[in-house]
Image (cartoon, rainbow, N blue to C red):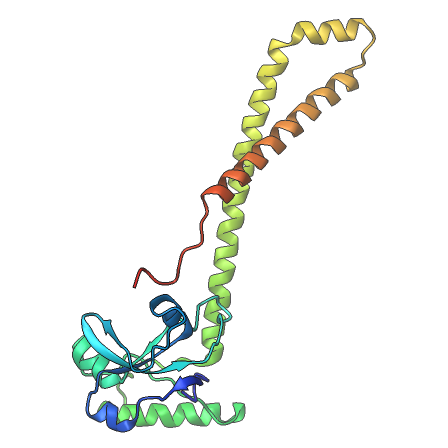
Length: 233
């Protein structure tokens, strides 16, 4: 709890005895509570996690969204022994979160963690590590790279859409000019200048583009509905 900054709003957290005894207990985030219990108090109630009954010991305080937009309240915390043996059927830990007391202590902590894991995993000198140790800056760099890639992808899609839309409008206006040569000739005959004719068709093209964009935005707004972070309870 200390590493992730989780605080309890009510109830209690599971203990070392619960972990050792593989007790089916859990602590819920506020999003889970809102979806499953509404305004009722979940402490002492029983929920099912993959068909396994689990007693609710406590409720976490609200944390909100993470910097990458993840709902940090959409979480269920359980003893890792229960998750390993009754949910996943494994004997190892997928991830271990660690926190240094100071930023300057991170290199020393990394060296100590690496040495401890190599000893526990019986990795001999000269052999490669059979685990990955991720530094917070590496995770931040990965997130920045993924955001940059997504931005470039969205910009590419937008550019293609603009090119296709521009070609479509150009074809429409070309057909319009071809079919209205008599009207253009009459206007020139009564004193209209070429720039007047050009301005007329430019205004029509801009109007078509604005109407098409507005219609597209309206359809997107009509068919885009926010998804709930959880399915039905």
